Image (cartoon, rainbow, N blue to C red; front, top):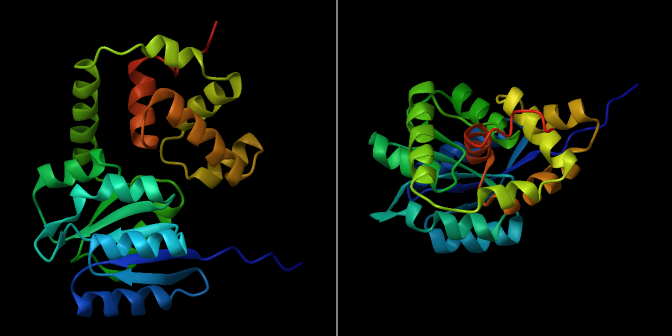
Length: 228
């Protein structure tokens, strides 16, 4: 019996170097029907227009766009679309990388990585994973924790608004941190679309921006422990 074809991962490329855009486009298009490039942009204003029109699954974003730091506009981009952002950069500064993650990016990828690694990172991020090495993950977790410790907020009231199903989803995510959204949805017997709806509700209630922040928040406030 023939298996139904999966939808391709739809990708927007944002970089101000035309030669790199050309090379990435050729690389990604070679993966058809699993991936496709739905647009390219050289600056953030253009990226926002294309992203809103095409609604990509993943945005491959350079940090330095002609001397303009794309991270300044990253939160606005993420508010406008449902895509995951994967940073593809030549910048080595760890503070800049951490800022990108804290601003909502799902991973950091260096431009000199092999074609195989670039494609793997796109697949993993599209599946809901974080693409970050352990050292960088530790730094980002630490900064998230410090930021939350500096805030006095009614967290108990926020947590109380979670439904039993939402608490169950949080526990699965904590226990299977490296699982994709699809794997988590399959384990829970729900569709990936339904899982995303639940995550949107959870993020809104707890005022977190992504799975990385959700895991950190949950561990800090004991959401991994069974409710009474």
